[in-house]
View (cartoon, rainbow, N blue to C red):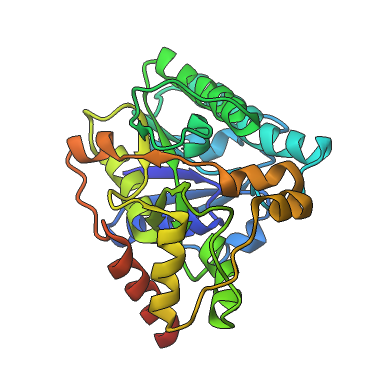
Length: 306
């Protein structure tokens, strides 16, 4: 297959490129900065400014499948009006422009897989969240709802469409775990708030695997929770990571301190989303790392070996 990947230089995108290329698929990468894509496992690279308009028409020719992963990191910097606009536009407008591009060509790709996030559900306490439930409230819920609605326009053009609601992707190459490790290794980490909020994590290998599964599984469409089955609370995650590093974790960060430090963005860390991968499991996806302890052991062993 010829597969186009937007956001190919990101943490998930680079792993998806490598996974699919190793299986013999031809990869077309879209990136704001093609120079950053030089080390990707891609056959072609095209420059694309996602908020400016559709991708170059030559990048879309004879593409069989599209994966859209582009988006401003949610916790890159403190939220103000300008940053919240960047977060929204980098997802909603980029998806609108990409769908406009693929809807205007012939032949069209057979499948469009677009990232979303478990932030769709908002703060839901202990409620078990599968893909059939409505969105929650708050800024990220609003963004995800608009984001998925733009992706769904591809289905109107008779393109099978999947929205992968990603959880917290664990990798020592980037993302949340990489940022956590220095504090945990120093023994100055602890739970966030009361620690009872559910922490919907997933190993990098499995989130890449779910995107691959979405492309190759014709029966799969609509939202898919990109989270591991073995979900834990924030306190549970903190304890497991501390044990894996053989370090204490006795310095909890109170909710009020997080909000003082991070403002509204603290809600990302304090919200509880007990998301379950119902659609992935029912469609036949087999998790390589369904439980947290083996996932952390693998990631930390990889880091040590590296």
